[in-house]
Image (spheres, rainbow, N blue to C red):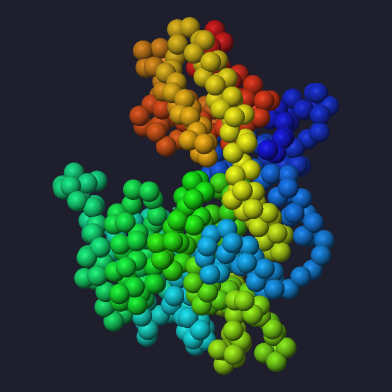
Length: 421
Ligand SMILES: *Cc1c(COP(=O)(O)O)cnc(C)c1O
């Protein structure tokens, strides 16, 4: 794990220690115990990944050739026909949508995101709609929603069903969007069968669905046409990376719409394992994905991280992460009277262990929101997981912890929870 001292800059000046790189711009690094969340900079990159990033920066390579090589690595890890590195899972959603909308039609590539004249509807369940699907809309897709949110509304017992998608397919349907989750309805394999019976592709958002590692292959094994994974979450690549993988023709279209196309058609030799030059009547202009460009350093680092993740190398860190959770739990339980109930959620062998800290309202008179805010504003700033704050619980994810940060975190928690009086 990346090791950086969590002392404040003032502490460091006093101790004559090296400053954080962020200090020169007046920014203090925080203690992040909310995991690989995007808002706080993603996951820590392992040293091998950082080394790959720096080594790649020293040389030039054609980006299309490098993406051709990336495709082979991604295919091996996922079982897909092909894959490319994108600048995040959300970018993968936008590029995957662009590929489904335009195919190899250069006129359509140029027209995006204006899609009125050709099929542009994506059928999606109301229960799958979420903020990240802005990426599909930005490429020119329009959603046709099916199913209801009856369980959330307390007005029914049923989830969305495959026939509801089928009933919504029509002449302007371009594809289906599915947001993967182990408990998502309908089962992906069932939906893929229905969509393929109508020759429609299924684009799957699986950005945060790693671990388990088996999802790298299992989601595609359902027959889904395109799947996106985030590179900056469990894979621990650069924060602004992701993977788009699936059917070769769609991946080729996505790559064409992302690459910088400032070349002569006569000279242009795209990677043969991805793009069949003969199927193109010309060379497209910069596509809708050109603002989503990916650097060679990001590609080298992501591929290195993907190999580490897929090999199970990261599982070695879980013991140390559990120890940090355990140290924090013990320190909080030793405060008298005890201000919290702690629950350690062990790793399943691949997932991060977690620590849930629930305020005991008869001891602590402040709300979990107040404590969370005070931790954010403190020195150093601490950011805990805020998913369950409304229930009086904050969640500690040890992904970014080391011994030194854990000690500082315990001090800050004790200060806020009354353990110092
Ligand atoms: C994190 C996430 C994304 C976005 O991933 P990025 O790699 O940050 O672009 C998209 N969809 C879901 C469901 C996510 O959890």
